[in-house]
Image (cartoon, rainbow, N blue to C red; front, side, top):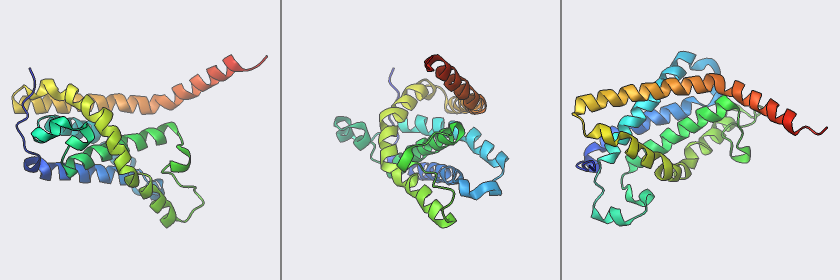
Length: 205
């Protein structure tokens, strides 16, 4: 049974603006120039909050009715709501930044982390340019992968009574956050072990 699309984008726009602001603050928190100004507990709290917020936003988005004309459009065009677009683009940006920084992966010339020898203001501008400035590209990625995945994942919860569905979504989000913490803690070790094993396997005699 398909979920009901019974919400107008304008009706939930204020809530999605709030989601977008929260995710924007999360993205800005990943600027390494802040150093120790943001406590580790705050970073942990943001990661714990990210997944429940994302699931709730996904459940709401799945109920939005963008109009009959939107059904004939590509998904990235059909989502006719700026706060909805910003929410998922910024959420994907935040998760991507956390992943890149945790696994020390570089994106080359488009990496948000500027050289450490640059002045702080220049490094901040670089970070903003390659995080917030990549918003449209990140939105396209979100519309192609993240939003469809969230629609599928949250569909069963939309058929439950609202308080129960919301509670289960938050619980699932916290479970995903716990899994993310495990991956972030052990992932670099696993990556180093895999790299070392691959190096031994391919090392010429």
